[in-house]
Amino acid sequence: MPAMAQLMDDLVQDPWRTANPFTPEIREATAALLSNSNDAEREAVLAGWLRSTHQPCLFARIAVNEGRIRYCFLTDDDLRKTDRHLRAKIATHRFEWHQDARDGRADAFVIAVVSDRLAHAEPNTAMKKVALHLCHLYLEREIHEDAREDETLPLTDKDGLAWYRVGVDYFGSHADRRWYCDHRVPGGMMLTANSVGHMAACVRQGTVPTGDEEASRFAWALRTTMSLIDKTQSGPEGRCTYLLPISEKPTSRPCPFPAEMKIPKGIEGKNFEVYGGLYHTDHTVRSSFFRPDSDPPGEPFSDLDLTYLYDDVAGNDDFHEMSKGYK
Image (cartoon, rainbow, N blue to C red; front, side, top):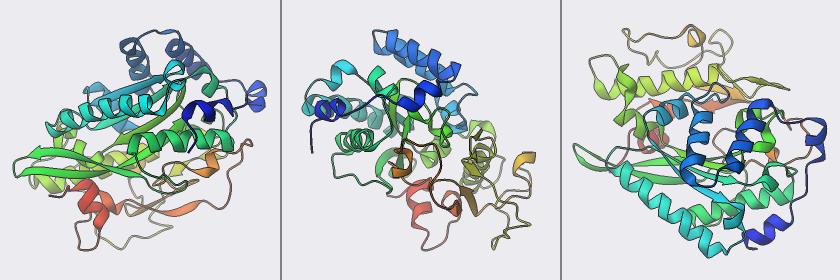
């Protein structure tokens, strides 16, 4: 695989962006990230973005407000160096994240590439190769587009060491004003690894009702995830992810929410087994994000899974590995 510096040389400026300039919030946050000279200042800017209403992820807001995110910033200076340098820098910050996760102090990891060239590059095959290579340097294995790329995160609980499978997701500045606008970030490019199961086991924000603690934490994770989906902003082609009314898509399971848990109005009467979306939410590097045009390809998905968050049944491996944790 070509070195990152070579892949960066293949990027071209995005002509679509000239006619569709960045929104003020992306433009200002990008300028702030590019002008800061150290990681502490960059972290303050990015944390401000993550806790803002400009991005829809409730888990990100919880994590940043609780100090549960660990960051690795890569600049244009880093990108001009060898892949060995990039791999070592990512691995150092990843190790620190795992150490804090083991002790219950962190759940999320962000690799933020702060690059003016990337921020203004056309989302095409060349940029997709940069994204795939960044993920390769992080996970240290071959990476495939339109596939779920995971890693594992440790947590020491009362029964010893547990592990959580964590999905990795891609975000880019080029998403601003495009149909996948819920994946926009300032500064260039970002990979995130965020364990909902790990966070539910550690935090739960004091909103879990008394009773069965384990079942309640899964219900909290489901409620927060559904609220996140309910609050996604509309883009040029409508909402990227959306809840499905039970009246239109009936459920086959009993309601997983405890009677004493308060349910936001936006998720009442909505399907808690599956939801819909313009892209597959499990995939890491989606090929549909790397097309110069701004139209979503293909038919929407109507069977994106929610049961991995709460359904403790045999055969639901995603629940046991991602939400419950395994020994």
